Image 1 (cartoon, helix red, strand yellow):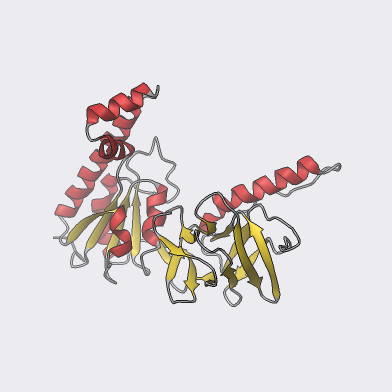
Image 2: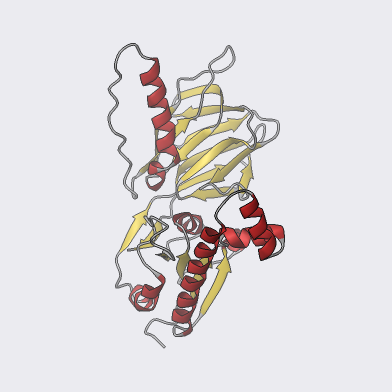
Length: 312
């Protein structure tokens, strides 16, 4: 048994596209028929699944020589209780690392890339074969880590949700988001497609696309050349968040001036829902794990007290 092996390791995985297809169509043959009938290449699904299976096999082998270990699927994260001394490993895509981190409270998180030729792996600096070497170093705190700022949304009824990349606040369907928004002394009623609140890590994702779209529209509509500076993402450990309103609609009853800004630790973003139903807050693209944000509910969004800890 390795030094430090008294610390439990939790390995988090997610189903592959092929596994999702088999679950939907009941058999591998039916899944193949569906994909090929649609004109797609089924061999790509097989290759991805095989690479993930091999990565999982190698990771499990490392855990056998470790000590206490547990393997869970991503869908169990919202209800899983991590120990304060646990070492957490995510095997999958970058999104799985973000999905896992928001349920942690500073436990070290190792990202394993099962197929480097397929996944960029910004949050996956290691491969499954590295795990046996990494675990003793992490357990004895001899491995460097990167601090990751997270966001937290707190509702007026006490419910909370954290985000590693970003929050979406708005309707569940393609209807208008109706709410009151306040930052500092500035307050207004808005109608939009929803609000994005991004962390530093998430500033290269959804927020970047919102900004790029806004700049592109401004350049296309202006009779003069609009000189837009290149987008500069925030550092992962930034001490603030950034929010952007998607497609704000000015009218007699709604304004559109408070549409972009920084959310400081001492100055959270506040929103009060004016949506009778369908209002939600979800984080990191996981729509199934959400907070209901319906009429009268107030949400306070700010920098979370705890930070993510990514092993590098």
